[in-house]
Length: 72
Image 1 (cartoon, helix red, strand yellow):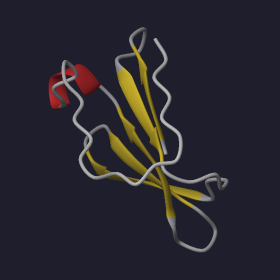
Image 2: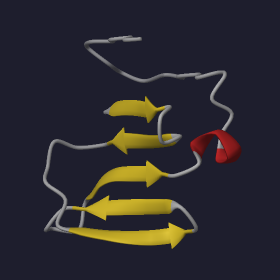
Image 3: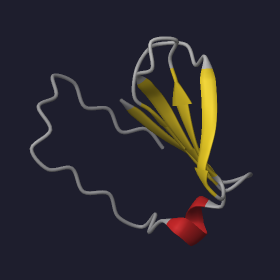
């Protein structure tokens, strides 16, 4: 999983799987869910992220990861 914020467009993309998106659906204004060919959710795109999310804090609880990367 990878979370990327793009300040120049105030958008956030949450990449959930290493699969290509075959379909996208807007589920609420400015929030688009990307689906793989088999129907799995592969990503979430959030426009105007700073007005929809608190970007000042990120808390991860009990995530069983082998590798953690923090990039600025």
